[in-house]
Structure formats: C-alpha cells, structure tokens
Image (cartoon, rainbow, N blue to C red; front, side):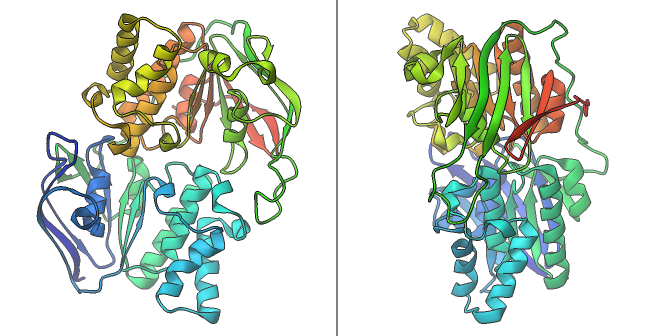
Length: 467
C-alpha cells in the first residue's frame, strides 16, 4: 500500500485556548487503510480531523505548526462533521446528495445510481424529498454521511458519525463504509467513543491524549460497564403528565408525505425520584415528545400538565422555572459569551442570590469535568464539551423536572458516567427525569422505566440491564 496522507509534527492552539490542543502529532495513513482515533471529550480529536481535511489552518484560525502532505496533489477528501448542521445547506435531502457528485461532473444514470446507493447505504431512501430542516439530528447525521459516500472520496474522515444514530443504523453505516473502502481502496479515519465497535472496522486504533497520539494495545481500554444507579424506593408524586397527546407537523413543512400523527394518543407520567427512558429509531418522535413537556410544542389534542397545571395556560417563564431542557443539538441552546454566564442565566432570571448561583455553577461544572472551561465561549468548545455544558445549563436552576435529549451523545465513558451520577443525584433530590436516548447502556443504568416510541405510540419495555 502507498502512503496516502501524512501529518508531521503538528501543533495547534485554537483561538481562545491557552494551551495547544495538538502537541507534535505525527500520523501516516496508507491507501485503503482504516484508522480509528479515540480519546476523551475535548482532547482534540475533531481538531486533528480538521487538520487532515485541510480546514486547519486554511479555514479555521489559530496557531498552527507542522506539515500535512498528500500522495497526490488532487487528493479528494470528504469529511462528515460531528455536528451535521455545520455542513448541510440544501433544501431537500436529494438536493444535498446531488450537489457534490454534480460538482464532480457526474450526470444521468451514473449520478442517479451513485445517489441511490448512498441513500440506501445510510438508510435514508425514504427521505429523498424531505426538507432537511424537518429531519431529526440522527437523520441529518445520516444525510451528511450519504452526501460524502456519494462522492467516493480518496480519504473519508468520519467525526463521530453515529453519535446520534440508533444502533441498527450505526451497524449498517459502518458496513457501507467498509464496502466502499473495499471496492474503491479509499482510506478512512473514524472518530468514535465505542472502542469495541471501532476495533471491528479499523486496522489501527490510536488514542489521542495530552495532545499526542499513541497506539492502543489489544485489549486496552475496553469499555467498562456503567454501574446501576436505580432508585429502589417507589416513585413519588406525578410532577408532569401527558394525557392522550396528539401532534402532527403542519402540512407543507415537509416535501413528502409524513405520518399523519407523529404522536398519536401518548400518555406518559413523570414522577418524583424516577427516570424514564424514551427509546426509538431516528425520526420516531422522541424529541417532539420531549418538547411538549417544556412548552416548545403544543399538542393538537390532549394536554400536558406540569405540577398539576395545564402547560398551555401557564406562562412560559413559569414552565421554565420548573422544567430544565437540554437540547439534542447544543448549538440550539447555547448563546452566552462564557460558560459561567450560560449556567448563571436561568437562576439569575429566577431571582437567585449571587452566592447561590455561584455555588450551583461551580458544583455542576465540577461534576461534569468542565471547571476549566468556565471562562470559555460555549460555541468555541468541542461538541462533547458543548454537550456537557448544555446539560449543566439546563439543570443550573435546580428544576423539578429534567428533560435530557441524547445526553451522552459524543461523550466518552468517563463523562457518560458523570452524567449518570448527575441523574442519580436529581432523583435522590426528588426530581423527575425524562431521558430521550439511543444509549441503551446509559438507560439501563439510570432509568427505572423504559418506553419505546414507534408509529406515534408509546409501548412499555421491560428494563433489561445491559451494563
């Protein structure tokens, strides 16, 4: 095999950071080779991907030293970003997938065949005419991947490509990448926190720590189970409830027919001291359901109550004082100029004294391993760091009800464990927790009750510990 791309003694310090994220990284990747990169959240994995893709230093400013060389001058690189919203721009899924291949000069049957294969590989064939703005984050992630697969790049860089994707789809995606690699001898760099999974697909697994790469030995760092943190006591009073909720998006918001009801007669109670997991494939409506409990969406029929009051008749600020919501996409939530201000915003608006605010901010950042980020601007953080800050911000005002949408996506084992401890602490203090997730391991560890959302309806699922 010929060397395809090489990074030599690369150093990089992002704007706003005091220390380099990459400290003399060297890496050579052969043609047709698959290299996996693992490491803790915020260690610089995405930064290294951006270096290999040429975005650093050409498009992303910062202090850069070192050299990246290609085997040929016109090496075609495709990158799937950790946050799909950062790369999708077209109106519909079909338009997004056709843009790249058309730019390569493909047309007619060849273009159609390329797009059809990529859609099938990513499991999005039924979404071709859908508006991208109406997709779930997991669906967007698969669209971003399909758009890169359709271009048959020489080097494919996948930055957490399945962090918001259900497990069957994740397996299908990695199988499709493997097929493309075998047929066209493309090189692949994949970043993922599931070490067991990347060992199945990668020729080498490298760990990035303290700004440097090292080979991960066989059997090293296999994922440890999350300890069970279930509440043995029976749940307390109902703090929030949905009664016969029906909801469908307005006609015309999607370019193709959607199910008539995204939510069809949903009944769900959230009780003090209990965590409930809502499971289901991408696009099943988990986020849609969660938004009803904070008033971001209103049911077409049925009702939602918080502390016994109909949410439709309750002022938004009153709902927000009782319900903390961590968005699936942190960028939809974060807005302040510093992490400190982000966490302080809600309690300050609810009239908390400064000492109590400082204590809450300090405690949450310590619990989630974010204390060193307190003066950073949230939108400059890595996706995993944003995830933890968004969870902390949702809980900073000590809500009675917490809604966590994919709280462990893009988090390594240690930080997922920290979130689990936080959920256990919420339950111990009498809060109700709703977890919308694909992470069955996390749900089994912290959620007393599991429900599957399919076809617009909720089905109770026997809790099977996968810890």
